[in-house]
Length: 193
Image 1 (tube, helix red, strand yellow):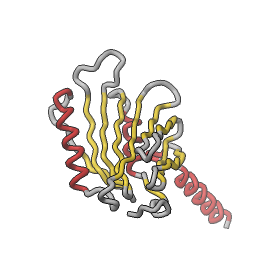
Image 2 (tube, one colour; image 1 turned 45 degrees about the horizontal axis):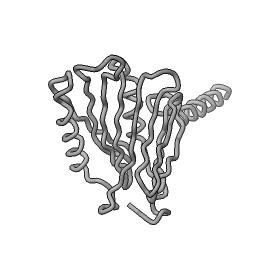
Image 3 (tube, rainbow, N blue to C red; image 1 turned 90 degrees about the vertical axis):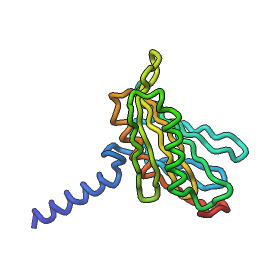
Image 4 (cartoon, rainbow, N blue to C red; image 1 turned 90 degrees about the horizontal axis):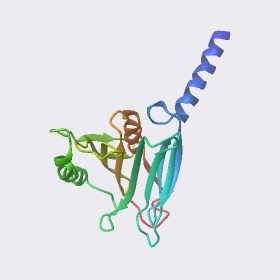
């Protein structure tokens, strides 16, 4: 009897820990970012990351900037865009083409001779990303780049992570945060998907 009760309590504790754990097992805080005319963008932000929202006026897309609370390991910028002609979101082929064009534009300055585009699928997010290393960084500059184009509801998230090559943890956390992104209340704002 005691073992069954202990097992149930242990299971409940593990489930609570799992429910509040964010990407890659790190604690996360769900941030709700207003997107003019398109509801909210929900992001599971890893614990220790500092978020700043740059929200211009007149329904201009917001840019969300993330940095570590301790030091300058990375800088992540995420801009939430929308397509005024296609309220249903962004086609997978368009996302792929967008990230492919971006990769081709920057590949001449990359150390890598082959840069792989990877697919990203989440519950409400889908998209593509790649990573590359600057072959001639200036002193003090970030050497590593990860770029992503992710469709979430009727939004396109354009993300740029600048980091140091040895910092793979924050790159993994970035991909997981984007993969778990969702959109809330787009219909309440008068625009549905």
